[in-house]
Length: 57
Image (cartoon, rainbow, N blue to C red; front, side, top):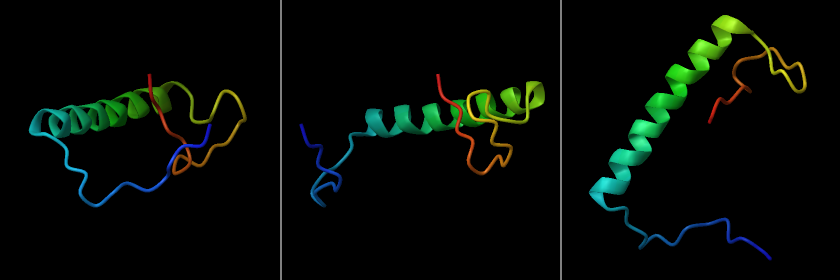
């Protein structure tokens, strides 16, 4: 199955959806900061450059 990578320009998020996305990104930032206090690298591959580290739950 192929996933379409680009989004149609007529695609519009509802206000509730926008709020959820914003809150999840803020939460990811706080989660990432907390993880970097514990360990300053990826536990799977060992990358230490935090520009490439993404934290999500």
